[in-house]
Image (cartoon, rainbow, N blue to C red; front, top):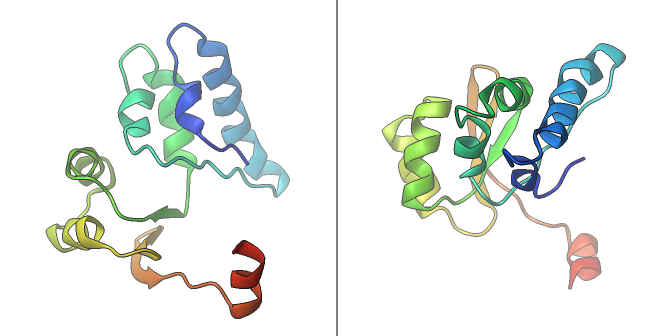
Amino acid sequence: MVDETWLLADPQTPEALGFLRDVAKRIRKYGGSLVVITQNAQMAVDFLAPELARLGQPVLGNASPKLLMRQEPKDLEVLRDLLHLSEAECDLLAGARRGEGLLLAGNRRVRLRVEAAPAEADLLT
């Protein structure tokens, strides 16, 4: 699990992103999974920048499924093209409330709402 993954998209230290690319390409062969987490949708732009695209594209391409929560308009512009989002999906993500989002798994896209169970809510608050 890699949180704040956007920090690895640095042209000054491409080795970090290169390592993540290698992990993303190999881990599935061993029955594992890589979880890439970020609150910064701009990560997609950073990962696909010309100087990093050969390292970043495999990380994004191997990521499946994808869970998208509320997005800012500038981030939606990037995600619309990258993930082929429909106008309705963009509208959903632009106006999503806390816990609402869109799950993309293969060719399926599902609107969802994530709610903590009472015991989980007690642990979190």
